[in-house]
Amino acid sequence: MSSAGLKAPYLRLGVNIDHVATIRNARGGRHPDPVRAALLATEAGADGITAHLREDRRHISDDDISRLMSEISLPLNLEMAVTDEMLEIALRHRPNAACLVPERRQEVTTEGGLDVSGAMERLKPFVAQLKAAGIRVSLFIDPDMDQIQASADVNADIVELHTGPYCHAAFDGDRKAVSHEVDRLAHCARTAADAGLEVHAGHGLTFDTVDAVAAMPEIVELNIGHFLIGESIFGGLHSTIGRMRALMDNARAEATGCASA
Image (cartoon, rainbow, N blue to C red; front, side):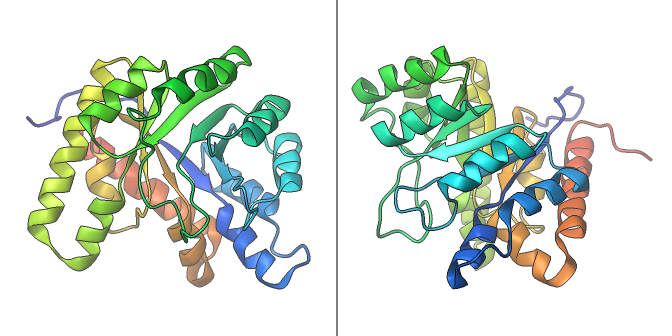
């Protein structure tokens, strides 16, 4: 069913600054500074900043998190694994949100969603501790009905739908797979919203793929990082974020019948 005519919420843009730190860490030292990138993202129209503090500290560092908490005005979304160490760090800093993600040392980047349905015994008290500290809890999941139900069952506030398979299909030019993945994301976004979960999405989104996801009225936030940081090499971070912001806004307006004539 078309979403035209539905009143969708403002679509927020969370900018992930991890890969500014990746470039910094390639040579050591302090340049480029991910906190400076976060401040530029703020000026360019971002609504939040995302940073993933991994167990191996391959990009964002503990000091980066401390500085982000003290120096930026936007809400911080701390991506983290479900470990005692990360729980202690989150409870100490109290970011606006904690996004729980699967993490494996051998992966280059997060490769799939969290298996919530298979880890409910561990997740339920973990989520409860974060929420008791005033931290909103997001679960990064594949667009799967069982995972959505499990996310609601562990009392998460938010699910972030993994858009990687959709973006890979688009890159490969596989129209059938693209159509399938868009339908799957849209169906799961509706289901999650009906379950009382706030719906976010992200992973692999680009200028060419953001429209279809931004048009889904149940989704209230997109988290985008690697593409924005990579594209900023050619066009500058402010301009790149501004263009992404405009594409998101246009797609949302057209989908809800609010586009200007």
